[in-house]
Length: 469
Ligand SMILES: *Cc1c(COP(=O)(O)O)cnc(C)c1O
Image (cartoon, rainbow, N blue to C red):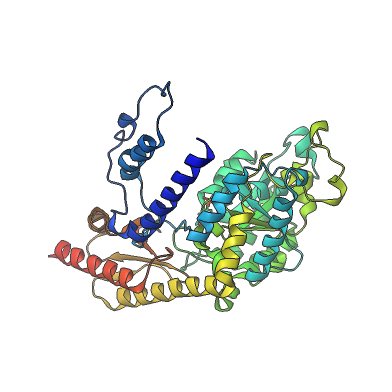
């Protein structure tokens, strides 16, 4: 493709994208294809001869699009959001155009310095402790793995990097912790057996006394506690672990404190939600995902550390071919994570923060929280509906409950969910809270307005009425 053709299709694609954004609401949220359906429409062998862009683009529309689940649909109430925004798409376009691989400062000084600057903006926006240093990772899972590896090296004074792990180190997290903690514990060599899942209270938050008990028990058994992971906004129900108490315990016992706020961290840009970060001064590391609720398209995960030295010493490498004269004066982000090669992700984040302004972003998040409270009110005052967890952010956990036994309630609510999702007008998913099948209504998609939430509730009520008849 030459640049003349590039311009032609570039304009066409941008027109298509704008139309998609305007009309995504008319498409079924969840893709309706059957397993293997898309694969069967793609030739087994690659084309030998060049194909026209017209043909490729038409296949995108006819073959690929029906197999897409539309995360940018205003009826998106599943999982957590993974929002984009027009301005972040434009930023991503420029990142692709520049095509820089930003492993070290010298391979694109602006990428390294903009990443530094924009993460300092974010630190101030959330009110994270002064001095915490940030780096962009691909996902929260990767950031948490970095935290676990740093904790491992700190606990063994960098001996495990040299000799491998010689004795078990123990990691603590709540029963409600995200699966990425278990994955990280396995990959980092702690072993799943050495992950202690601490019981949670009636609101699904970690019980600090139980954490301390577990640490003391392990110490008495001659084991070595190394790290505790607290969650602000758990995946199942957005529970908030009590950071001040957990921080005191971590500090007292010399444990690394990692905080996973992948989804809910964005809420800390609101003064009225800052309380979630009370106790933040005890954190050794913190992660949240602008690619979830901050209008910055996937991937973009912000990872912060109190003392970058632990991170850098864990990851740094000095092969001759990567040495540059600037090394003593700059940040080489290859030493701040697992990958060597890095995308220029700071650009889209910079665009988003500037284009919306902090106030614009706050207005979005605040509106989603308001709509969640509205929905919660409807659940609470409607017979046969049950609220399953406190609503702190944009998630309402609820179920239909007419008093039948638990097994029958599971079937009832699964049927409700399947019928709702089959309408194509909305998409919501479920979880289990203390073993109870629970529907998760997440309000956080960029385009979601009150009318969408009202329409969703009307559908929930009318399908429920039929199911209870
Ligand atoms: C979404 C989520 C994760 C995983 O995020 P990725 O960026 O997809 O790895 C981890 N923890 C919590 C609490 C989450 O909500």
